[in-house]
Image 1 (cartoon, rainbow, N blue to C red):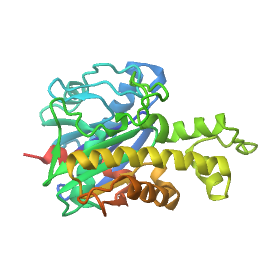
Image 2: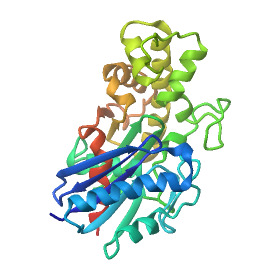
Image 3: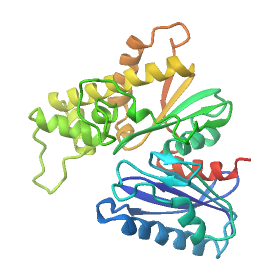
Image 4: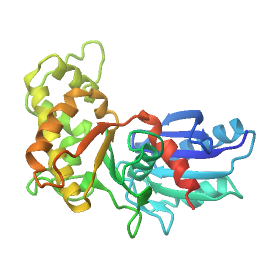
Length: 307
């Protein structure tokens, strides 16, 4: 059974899947990225997943689509993910092509792939100007206009996690200061809450992470609630700015933090209504992703199928 091999490379986990041309996901596998263990260790994770999916496909795939955390360079086929320190200018496209010889390999940003997947098969179907976002370990994004992904000069268009929302804010891993990712990503919200005195109950061995923070906010913890409000305010500033530049009609948000549901979307919609006041921005819809964690894989396959 042949199909499209899709890869979704993130700072926390790497996923691979076998996708039919109609967007159906026949098989998936996921492994931890092991980002702190060096260049070749991360590649070994990718190689293991490729071998697994190719075996599942009966030894043959028709094409490969890769969605990677960025920055990326589509022309060179390289990636330099902020959250994978060992990969700087890493020749991911060529390494994958060598592992799966004889088929076309296409590289895109993970945010672009998520957005394309949601536009083709999920919450964004039929929309003209859409921003897809992932709010998780980082904040990623991609733009789809009139059915086509907007890539830009190097493939990094839509890299909304590094829109500056606080010029005097914390230093970001990208080297800048005050990026929305430093405020609204899961780890950033947790760090801020801990610094403000939040004391999660970790007696059962539970890590203080975004899921724990969301549970505390749902239970009414004031610091956890403020952390989410602070994060949603930063997202609203960024979305209002991007929407004004791009004349968006839809924003689709996925990722681990988005799983907190109303805790994220309620305050975000309120904050956006306060900030996006131009006539063409009033009523801008912000919705949850429909494809969940599969959006990146399905979108990477869709990218591989683009003519």
